[in-house]
Length: 99
View 1 (cartoon, rainbow, N blue to C red):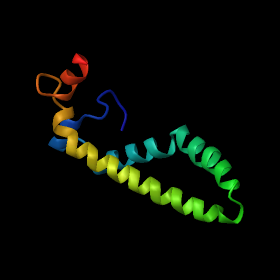
View 2 (view 1 turned 60 degrees about the vertical axis):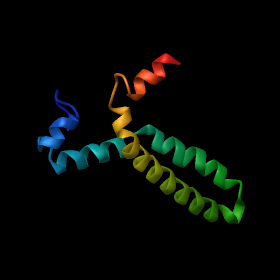
View 3 (view 1 turned 180 degrees about the horizontal axis):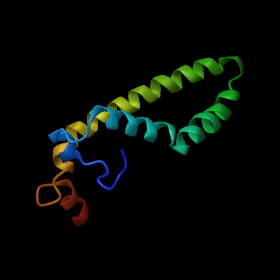
View 4 (view 1 turned 120 degrees about the vertical axis):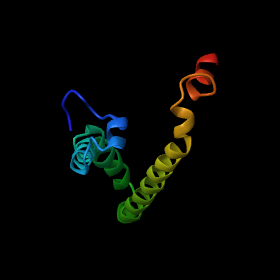
């Protein structure tokens, strides 16, 4: 994690990045991200407070919605990875730049 090499996907495929580095990077991105606290505590907490006793149902719905969203985001990224990784003709970036 860190250093000048950063997160290199090719190095990870070659085995240059170990599971410990991946786990530490994932934890750092998750827990050191200020948006986690702003979205979860401030935004969702203030909205949940308006539901009174049903705030626990709101919290459960937010958890399920988050799980569905991030699962779909992960599988969608994997599905589109081929198109998104090609910047030239036939790739996503060429289509975006022509618009």
